[in-house]
Length: 398
Image (cartoon, rainbow, N blue to C red; front, side, top):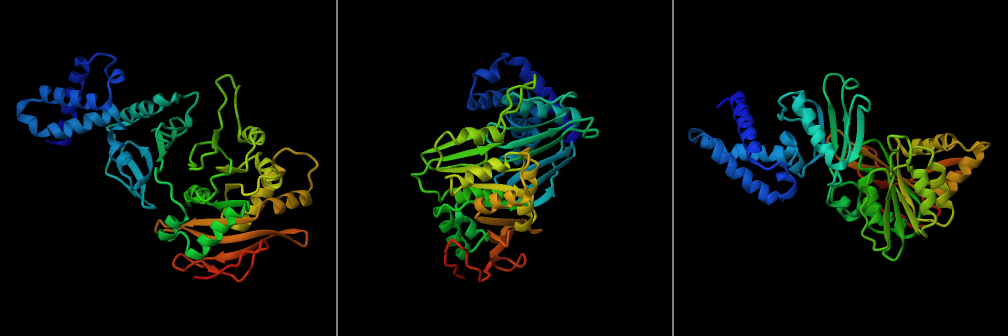
């Protein structure tokens, strides 16, 4: 049976099934009951000479009724970390660090838009010509971004970053080649010793994964407040609290920013703050918190090197809206707040690795980045530079 005939058959069976079911069937039944009923009805309506298609039809119809339609196998695939839909017949995935095109297709733009609405509705989101792009977090923790025409051309564009259930610690990342045992021991000491850490790198380099792994080594007796725009940090400490930002309502009211959350978190008696990503006016609030009794705090920032991360911190500080703050003052705040910078990179083979581990110090009135460990290229190992950090840890090689 050709592809077109199969689609015609599936559409016909779908219509008959929907006509048979009560209007609230999918709301009042659990997944198991729905699967059983759809399977029975599919076989009931399927012509006897096409019964060999039953398994495929049941599978595809369940994908449509319960899941994400054609991309449901990608959602279920644990090796797929990101799904990128550029049009009905252009579906890409990131799998084990590599981006590749799939053979998955939607019938047309209308079917693609149907699934956009199906995905967004349970989380109370929608897109329209008035609001043609949106980012949201799905119930399973995955993040979705949707852009629709006219700003995306002729087709909706969907990006789904899947939520990763397994939260690794530093030993797991060592096994994966992200770091070696010398760096692992150093970072464990750094976390337990309550040094302030910033993880930097480009998009998709594994910054949040490393932040999660570092946080696993925070002593359980400490109180930790996590602040994010989208919930990605998972803590196992008993005395931990997770706060997320909130967008304004349609009237433009009720917005809660990272800056609001940080100011509120300081009244919650935190030992440490973990900020998913700093990228705006909240930067000075983060730095000042690190300077005022919240040692051992951590965050990420987009940058292409440890040195560039410092420049970004300076730039964002000047853009934070605080008047009459000199460059010298900003540098002193950064120098006092940030102890360790970790720079990550994703290589062409898909591997994500730590490239630099550095200390931030003031030297002659200027901020300086002193590398403690460095990786020369993709295939080389992280090696100590010989620099001994000011907080006294003895750096050992493998």
